Image (tube, rainbow over all chains, first blue to last red):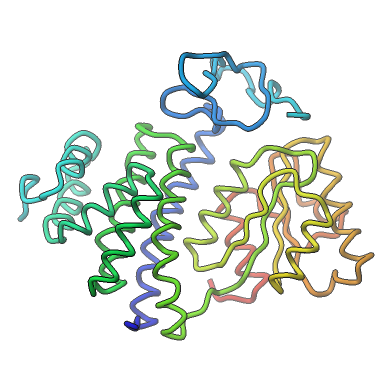
Length: 79
Length: 249
């Protein structure tokens, strides 16, 4: 089996962490303005109920939220 | 200097053309992919597409064909994730798509882990993660898991609606020194405290460091319930995990 130089691997982890830090930072900013469960097609990916969910044509429910309100109040606690 | 047409993979060319706008980033990414093999570009493309099964297959094939694991990371997995990061920053994709790409990254890394292990490179720690009983919100936890894995932790994800017994069972089964609990609802937040109590009752509290997080959780609440630490977001979660594991940051 091939071997990996630990120092070289650390460099890759550092590069990956840099990318992921950027993602996490942007995610933290985004969640104040857009529901994080809403994908790029405005489909809801949540596994729980939300009053903003509407039945669409596809398999996933659509999000009818306008993101202007605090969307978290729409989430149900009991799924 | 390489040009876009020097990249053989049509999907990657399209992604760069459509989504990478900043000239410095565009130049760097074009140079990276232009110098990479076709199968590395295919791995990156599958990762950007969030196709974990294809990343799994292509990574295995690449390693079996003798390609170095670091090359797979550089030109396949990390290169793909770099494009994902730019697309997310520019709001072309959102958290669910990013998490699909992270799952694809994990599928690829699963083939590199045995090589790491054989090279004497172990994860910096083992973490059990889960959303507490009664709570089905998982995005925050999943972002934390993505970050922890990227930082070199091994993460066992228990998913959502996790009972105290399940947390205890997982910590024992995996001999994990670290546990992370997430809750998004004020109604389920007390289940974090109940889980900590269950660890005390099982006489296992000293065996594991417990970190908590989630929108309604505060440092004060974490202190009150007896957690070892509180992370307000995914970045803080990684910093806290490293601190609790005494890893230099």
